[in-house]
Length: 227
Length: 72
Image 1 (cartoon, rainbow over the protein chains, first blue to last red):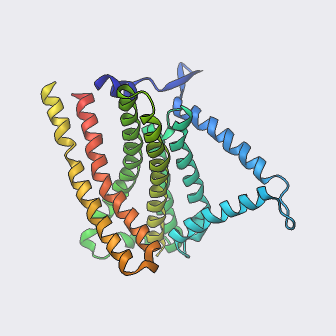
Image 2 (cartoon, rainbow over the protein chains, first blue to last red):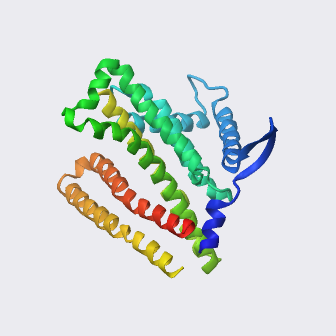
Image 3 (spheres, rainbow over the protein chains, first blue to last red):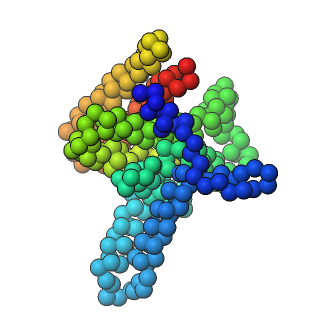
């Protein structure tokens, strides 16, 4: 058990060593996997969006339009009317997390299993949330917002700035790590058939749910910040 | 090693709380949908939010258990 955990968590995550100054500039495994699926997604986008038309649309364009409308509709429903301008960012994050959770299907390690990736995502979220509040309310009202509903709870509101991103990143990381640990243990016990069935749950269903939850919470915070 | 294992097992008990929390939330959501089937979109959203928050405690327990095993 300990060996497995050590292998998953403590191994050297560096894939490429680039000489930089006196030492090395390390490129992590998760970054390279992200590059690979970024290339795939960009190729897919270029394929889907070339020669779009207004009349006599092709099947490809119809599928693309309905997918984009579905994602935008789902996200802007969560964001509400006032914060609708942040829809595209949330959709991007949704696609990124969803795909990086499912990349385990193709035999890669999910990038979201690296704590650095989830920390980066959650810091981006909290910065966006606070910036949204700042832009909407102006600096004075934004600072006053910390003392609501009573000045007594101000420390709690400041503490929330740390707790929110911490729980966002730990939830994503813990879920993906837990799924991977369970799958690895299962592969030791039953090497055939059963892992395939459970992979459907852990890689597809759980990955999609976690991506949805991350975006849902982020958009809920944004909605709360701009009210 | 045995005490380490015991510590990790105790940390895994956080799963009880998350299980009870999610089951209560699901039971109430089922109730609510049975009463008002037209509101199921909103109920589903709230249920997912509640489940995510309740499940976070279990995840914290899991992360702590892993820390106990790795860093003891």
